[in-house]
Image (cartoon, rainbow, N blue to C red; front, side, top):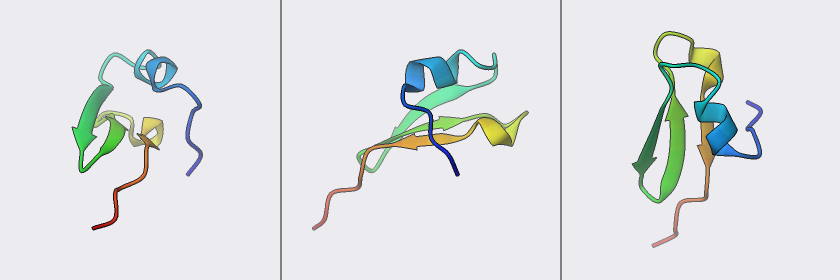
Length: 46
């Protein structure tokens, strides 16, 4: 999956897009149009 260089632009692509932080990563999720998904950041190793 391709990831957009800026998650701010990814959020503004669709009104249903949400930015969520999980496990040290930032996700853009969009339930109405799943192709707008994006991830930024690597998970920290334990």
